[in-house]
Image 1: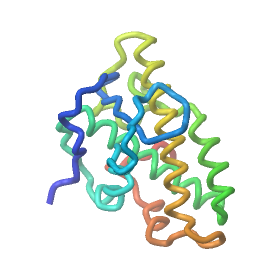
Image 2: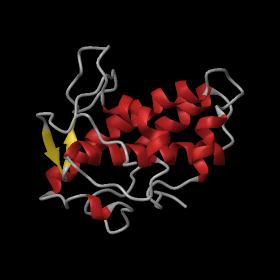
Image 3: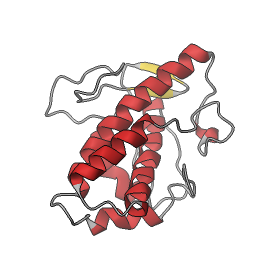
Length: 178
């Protein structure tokens, strides 16, 4: 069974570092195009929908720039779960705060030698492309954190064990942190 791929593979959008800059349903400020239809699925919905299944795969065949967006945000979701477990976070408000802080943190990205997924991404052509990529991903990471906290902490004090079990796995055998 192959890994799940993004349904946005044919989307007309800008591409930075080989990554699709897709519309987001968000109120978070940033460069992402706004998805006006709240009922329509965006890339963050896809990441959360496919996360558990895609975490089980050790390889991934990239079919489009949208897949690179999916891969990066899946890896970032694992990063958030790992921090949730390490900090022993038990309340949604604490998770929201933690996830916001982590979204502002500079993580390795395309063009950085320490980037765990370097083989999947193009190097930025110039510093402007890297800044655009970083800015989009910061916005996407912040929105992803808000949605993930709602999924994990449906009731305060109890983290969803079916999500938290994936904090122990590595996506594609790699992680932002060890």
